[in-house]
Length: 353
Image (cartoon, rainbow, N blue to C red; front, top):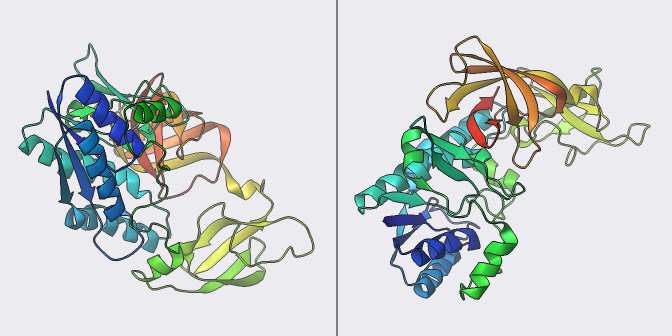
């Protein structure tokens, strides 16, 4: 087949391209530049790495800018969520709106049958004639959490060549093949922020509104720099002393109306835990939920990347998902994604409300 590989300059996508080439496919590497402002984003070096890797593998490569699409479909939503006092996860939206939309469209225009990425995930067409998003063999690196909102159409064109491999083996393959990025560190964080100070970056787009920090008992404890800079369960950067005990302070809530940050002492404060929750804008891989509207079903869920799977009972009402947890959950954060699982597959996801 002719296959386009989304290449980031990292070892994972490089090995994905190498393996497909070794299997006899016609492989084309495409590097996406989704951010064009000056800053710490490493896109220039990353593209240099892509060029070097493609030269070693012996495949053609392109660089394409999706900066406008990224701003319109991902970054604007990112800012709006922060305006609402929530903590968004742009990587989930980037996969659905950019990688498996804009990049997939480009791949098809190049005559490709499939779009491959270096994600740790799997895809399989089963007897029901539907495509299933499967968890990767390396549970520690599994990235289905970030892919939980892709559609049937997108998944039908997806390939994940690394699904059976763990990270040490991937680096070993890269080293043996002479791929120059075999020791390159994994990227962390959000590309458009990079190594920059997060507060400084965000304040360039959203005006900060400092306010007061209050305990749950109503005592004024200090000042915050703006509610958008804090997330549920956060303990660093609060600037509050021990107040007579050794217990640290943690963010347990935000009062947007009064612009107050609410804190409580103790990592195990009951206010950090919930037994149930609501998620919205549900997206199901199959195109429909696992049960009829209003009916309850049991499954597993992950409220953050790499969190061990949690047992939940779920009721879907339209695009809303009402969740009851078998074990109370700590710091389930509005704006973040929840991904749902059954056996070896990801069923879909929704945004925690």
